[in-house]
Image (tube, rainbow, N blue to C red; front, side, top):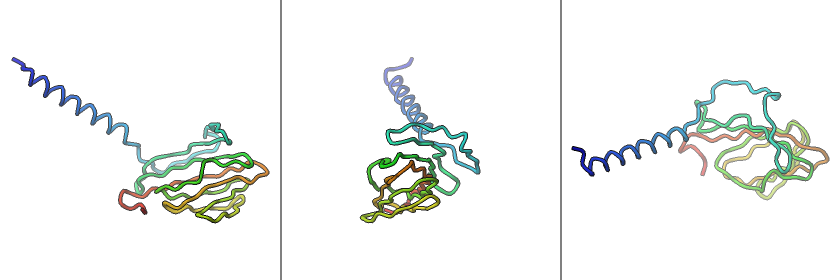
Length: 149
């Protein structure tokens, strides 16, 4: 005969197993391997300051996470407030220009220019105009324990 204790143990076991499976499925992204991403295939999503194209956001064989997106911002706009984060970033200006705030210094970067943002260093961007600015962002996060603090 099944006792109340047996039912409680079974329910707790099922709940823990289901929670573990759900957590594992939600946390695991496929590993990014060699790939090609064509501009024409990237969907532009409107933002309040321009538009954004998501390219990829995944672990790779050598990194905890590698993310790439392409941002276009209108003249005089900023994509978001200046900030800092653990990931490092490489930004390549495709067209237009950016004012790149790094710490307390602002640099001007034109089309073809490259910006590097180190881990946990304060940074931000602004499009000084006159036209739109489009830039590629590559956000790089090392394996656990290797990220600068």
